[in-house]
Length: 259
Image (cartoon, rainbow, N blue to C red):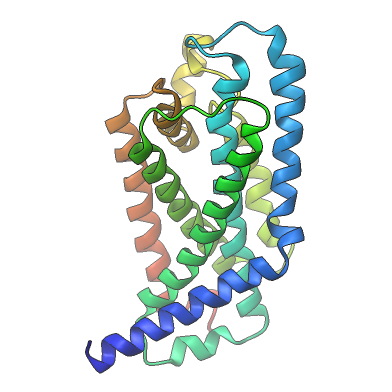
């Protein structure tokens, strides 16, 4: 490995380790709450309400909502990890040290994204374990399920980075999750099939990127989906490409960082 390659590898791993240690150190705030929330979803929607509902696509209601609840944990935690961590770096004024270090801006971005992916996957795995206490976990296609989970974590880590760049206070980092992510998640097919909606609402739902994520992951676990798998992958990858390009542009220009 060249000297530059070794330097870049050390820099990337340093950022990644810092991110992992950060959310692991405060696990009771970062990892534990999604577990409690998911358990309540399964108890209320799965057991109490779900037992009164008809099966969807041949699966009991509690089985049908498992993929959506897992992805909800993945996307919210990957997003939350990067937005809080990078804004903390801005607030503490140590992000400038990384900006002037002899490493590519893309490596800084990838380090933070990898940290968000790590937290998203950890929460996703834990939520899956919790789900196993309430129902049997199905696995139709491991590679589809795993790839969608990773791509989703990457996508929302990039979204969290952009939010952090534009945030001017700690209050700003909660605006997007509260007023954008939460509505999109609940309207993204987590708790229902869009085939149950009237035609106009099905068309409107197609503009929700989370719909494609949830359905692609649902295919990986259950083998059923309201969306063609190739279209779902195309939408997810397109969002990743756009968000990555925009994030790198913001970082190179120092927008929201340099004053």
